[in-house]
Amino acid sequence: MANPCVWLICLFSILLGSSVLQLEASHHVYRHLQSLQSTSTNQPYRTSYHFQPPKNWMNDPNGPLIYKGIYHLFYQYNPKGAVWGHIVWAHSTSTDLVNWTPHAHAIYPSQEADINGCWSGSATFLPGGKPAILYTGIDPQKQQVQNLAVPKNLSDPYLIEWVKSPYNPLMAPNAMNQINASSFRDPTTAWLGLDGKWRVIIGSKRHHRGLAILYRSKDFVHWTKAKHPLHSAKDTGMWECPDFFPVSSVTQNGLDTSMIGLGIKHVLKASLDDTKHEYYTIGTYNHGKDVYTPDKGSVDNDSGLRYDYGKFYASKTFFDNVKNRRILWGWINESTNASIDVLKGWSGVQAIPRKIWLHKSGKQLVQWPIEEIEKLRTKRVDSPSTVLKGGSVVEVSGVTATQADVDIAFEITEFEKAEVLDPSWTNPQVLCSQKGASVKGGLGPFGLLVLASKNLQEYTAVFFRVFKGQSKYVVLMCSDQSRSSLHLDYDKTTYGAFVDVDPVHEKLSLRSLIDNSIVESFGGEGKACITARVYPTLALDGGAHLYAFNNGTESVKISRLSAWSMKKAQIN
Ligand code: DQQ
Image (cartoon, rainbow, N blue to C red; front, top):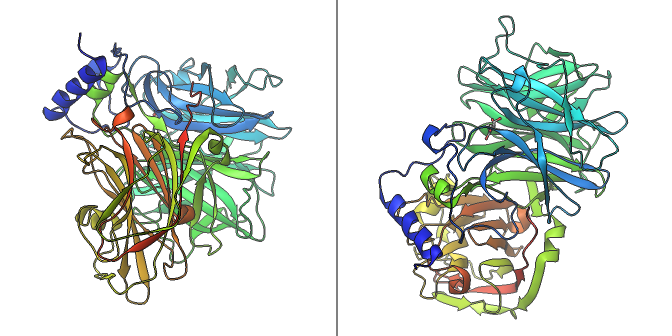
């Protein structure tokens, strides 16, 4: 009897090698794959501490909130199979954002206004601390409309049952409002204006201009569309899952979504359907005029700032008023295709929730895995400060390399050999693809080889390169998946980001959360994040190793290196 794990990997290879490879689009309906169930029991790519349901398709995180001390995560889910379709809001709760208990589906098609699907949305706290959910329903004409649901029993901290408003839909396209009925979705958390009216934005597009359509309401039930969107940007296409929230320019604490005043900036994030990337801007919200204007230099399109420069989409934040922080959830899609997802019986993972705040420069956000995840750390390994010579690879032994949290910092004292940055090298992803981990440089590449097999036939490389720019040194962070698996044909795009740190005065830090098939990396203390989805064939279980490497000619110093094995969390 063949080992089922080998069997799954073989099938995986056959499918990957064949012509069926076509990456998933989030709303693509694979009719023939809709409700197939996998029988595979051995699952090398399932995660140990990243949230995922036991089986089937999952996409966007929806309506995260904290109520009576319990964290709630709802998410887009197909109860019938491992590809997108039959979408409901599945529901899990937690006391620590790490260990999760599943509950019955919270919102599922049951009214005309959502009979063809319950798509993404957000939660808002109404006066008296009552949660309310606005979500997109797909109506009998396949139009996208906005609906309301409220808890049936407010004394239940688990919020198991939800009741839909008899007034649904509350917002709908019609002949008067010029709303595009197939591009009108994903209401944000609403905020309360000084005039006592609620505001909410809905993602949309007109022609190819991305829109945050604004609605106002006095009672949360009757909504009127504002004349102008809160914001829009040309050539960005459909804005999915917009998010709009205040951030403090003085502290790392989070703010309630309705906060306005001095020392507060606003963030607008859009998930671009065209590119499947998210970008955000930092700017000013004029609450008198209900207009948001990005700051000068805050780029308002796909080349703008991103929460994550790898696989991370349809994200959503919420304000945790117990710990006074804003938390970001994001969906990590697979890098394989639908047939493979059906074989393994599931698709999609959620990233580790991240605390998010405005950097003191005011120019970008910073993200860091929630502190609670550190309670999964076990078997700590520390390495004394060492010089990593050019061309060296050093094993970090003593940790479970498939399930680890690694924190490393590099110090650079010699900059002579830093390569000159060509002014045309403005796209970090392209630069990382051209200068992958195996391309020798002057100052770098140096970093980590994770999920690596013994003889380095397989590895995912997360690393830095330092360039000499016109007036300062420029730090590039890359996550190179090109050697992540012996499987030939899944999406192995190399990702990249510039990290706004000064390597002359600051150490270059890198933290990677490794979880079997996920590598979530935070560079420059959370200034640049890159999440990778990988499917090793050799670097599994005991075959996986962790290394620090330097493939530049100049030596660099490892000033800090701690690694922990991570315990398994209860992830449903
Ligand atoms: N996913 C949902 C939509 C949203 C998209 C449907 C983003 O509401 O626009 O599952 O991934």
